Length: 288
Image (cartoon, rainbow, N blue to C red; front, top):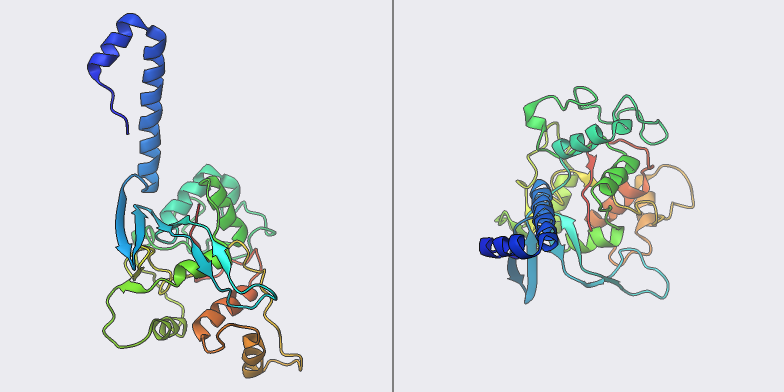
């Protein structure tokens, strides 16, 4: 940030009151901007390198570099799509952060929200409309929020939800913390988590794992809403019925890697959602 010399301010005061007033307004605006950035955890920037790429980690958000991504489901005539650089929340949105949004927008309180925008069970883990409850819940991912609510929160922050392609592209970075010594692949570790029952208590955000872009807890905490969650239609078994093996076989058709069960499970989960659902282990994070 530009620095202002006190002597220069005195000089302005003597010679140009209008210039002084503009300088004071600029300084005040800059201080407010820094305060707002600190509130969002965005004031400090750190850089590192991964495979020759400059990785910029802004406290609170991680810069995802531009690149190409091969969508998990084939689209005729499209082999890969370019992902422009963007910033992604380093951690999922917490109960504390979402409470600030609800207080500022009471129409999103549990007792006030329209059933068209959030089903029964919305924020059911909170003590009341404007109280989270247990102190241990403050800094853990918010869950039981609908897509509409997540999208409204992102808009309130002047951000947005990530697209499927952005989320999946960011998730491709290798997990670098913790340094797993089990010998299992990344997909095996993710599947281990997917196969576990829903967590009764979540961990504080940022404590489970971190990938090479500086994004934390993409796996191991909660599933996450994306902007276009319903844009990919997984083919159903044309023979009908509820045979899971038949469904999985039909759903794997048209994927770039039918053996990538972890990614398939994410697409299957998204395909099962409706925008007003409020699921016990479904949260979100924002991008810009």
